[in-house]
Image 1 (cartoon, one colour):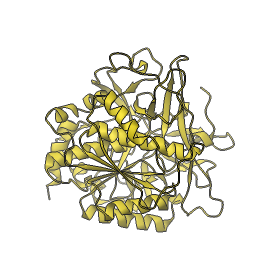
Image 2: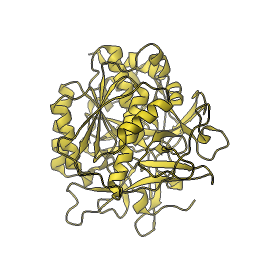
Image 3: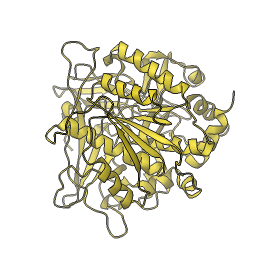
Image 4: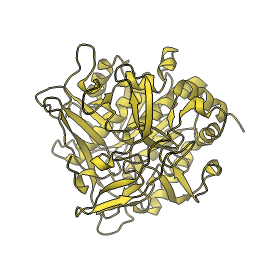
Length: 460
């Protein structure tokens, strides 16, 4: 497949929303990719994000509820909530009545989706999930929806992914969507602060990020203060680790460079990386997992690496000798080949009809982990709050193999091209036993992980 140009493949503050959509008749696929406008005046200023979606419909499920991408012979595979719930052992918790009751998940995004409620209802009905309890806040106001604005459209797709897949993992948790007036990182920070100041929920998911050196230091300082306030209120914070592997787009938008992604690299945030899950396409039975890396075909890789802004926190002292904070802390499936089904009805349908598309990227894994912790809060009877200390105690304990799929295959090196079409390679990090800067501790075995997380959260 011909590689897409840099402007069509960049990971930006939306955490490179990779969206692959099926062309049923042709057996081919395309994806939504994000781009970021270079700021010529200064690198260390807030950055707007522009998106240029490419799309086609994924058709409709058959009488049994399965899509063509859930058949072995199809070129690109996909999963629905049932497969994820089984692969990551969420189903035993749901069957026991742990479905997120009493918990609230906060999703931070920009602009809006004009069809977010109807798409969430479509998603819930298609996969036999309870009707979602969704509340939307726009504390700074939002501009009117412009269907011709590709930037807005991309964020609308991100919104659909975030709310639907947090709901898929915690179907009875409340969802609060907080929308920024633009996709400037400072505007996203503003609404995150609003969510924390008003204590809108128990868990916050941020499916976006940027190279650390591209963020204004004043924004990073203010952001950390917001996360400190959230931690004092026992709010758990997640952020996507990025979709260009060990690389981030350069601040001028012309190439890529070795960098961790912020806000995932903040020490008070749980950074979520990406894997490629192989599971039974019908039942979801877990088969295997590796580091997500599809950069050779232009589809990205799970973010990870070491911060140049934040020093190594105490909880990482025994897992790395690097001076900087390492990310990610945990991971979940983020591959394009093995993506998740999402309903987005404002995208014009093709001849197959229906709103369905396949999404990939760590944009998916962050809200999924937020859903898991909503279940954990219910199971514990209180907010788990800052979980990194407990995650690393658990990871270094005899209980580790009970709680995580340890990913030991693959790496997150980046391979791509710059704005002039020149090849770019950024060497990354390999998966290994235990924690690593490609997948963190690995992916969840939820039925065991959540009770153990509460246990280690209570240890001094």
